[in-house]
Length: 594
Image (cartoon, rainbow, N blue to C red; front, side, top):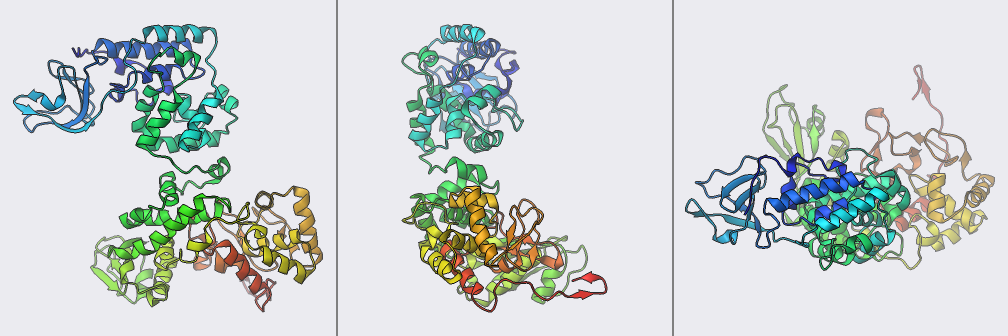
């Protein structure tokens, strides 16, 4: 029977390996997970014994009963549910409330669907059948503790590699799961035990990013760890390691196979690009997110552009991304919902739209101007919205008005990109290319243009490619160019020397530029982490200068809005016309430089 005691598992401290020390109910019916936690590489004998003590407490309370029925329920109206932080409450003989926060109930006297409490039955919302072995694990804990006392348990990298292969998980994520989620309860950025991090050759930032990705699935952790203990012989966990196939099967059943980004891409992925949406974009189902609300629409535009510019040119994942772009183009116009652009805290938007100014700190009504709506019901600010279904197309006059509003309030540019049909040129351009490499390398995306540039200026193909990158890309830093082109420093410097000899670029030193070669002309500073760039490039990049201040990034990460081939072609054509890069006439006034 379920013997509820006044002391027990919640009073134990399992250290940082135990993320939910007060929510032990999550591990009822998944008790084998405690053995996996105990087997975390590097654990001390004391840590193993703490997990064993926890497991024994659950056994003594009756939770390891083979007839255990577990479910999230709704209580009858006449039954007082447990308080939010109550984790043990006896409801009846053999019936226990495990977690008041989500109304988790366990029974050893029969199916919960047939249990009556004060004449009423519980409403079962989510059955949670036990998973993992329910065998007596005492001997396994003892053997693990004895081994840990002699030498800390080692980790086999093949475990994580196998899990990544089967699931499509990033390798770092797979390693953390296969190791038993070590240190996941820590609030420190550097949370992994040093020995394990060194063995896996992980950087602190890589591990921290993987932890954030896995936290999207915290509810699945106990089940994953429980099935990792070999059900036929739990002692094999000590000799053969976790049951990776069982972990992969559960992951695929609950989460599904996720397209995996390379470690190189994961390392440079901005925090503004959510992992959850990457999967939706790469599988072509992101239209649902765009329709959901403004926030998801922002993220869809931001994430889609980042993927388009950073996936390898020949990546098969680009096919799914192309499908997503095609679906989103239509999806955003299907619903007459309004998308929030941002808030104006002064009268600038009203001045722009010709609306009367509001009385200070007084609420106002709602005003509609074409596809735009200004909601002044908040006494402190005006909320600005756009209704995509009210637009006739990308040439609609309200598009230009929406752009002016976005620049005025300093937000909403992702929505503008979507409603202006910004993904239209990307649908075909984003598909996998024949040549491998980075799309930022003109030799991959526009090889004929590289040949034309080389012949026009009488320079090598490498120098021509470098010249196109300096003409078109926002951040052709020395490091980026070498990464994109697969060059050594010597190769980059040789190509740069040709450009200098032809006077196509100038050499100098500029703060935070990350390079010494520049187009002649004006220079725009941007707040970190964005690197500054030449003002000549501004038409192609989501940057603007509000009120004469520093340049601001319209879309985090500052991806170019045109596909690579179109961008290189446009930059080359412009450089051959009257608007080529160059220094303008210096103008001054009495106060100094304008």
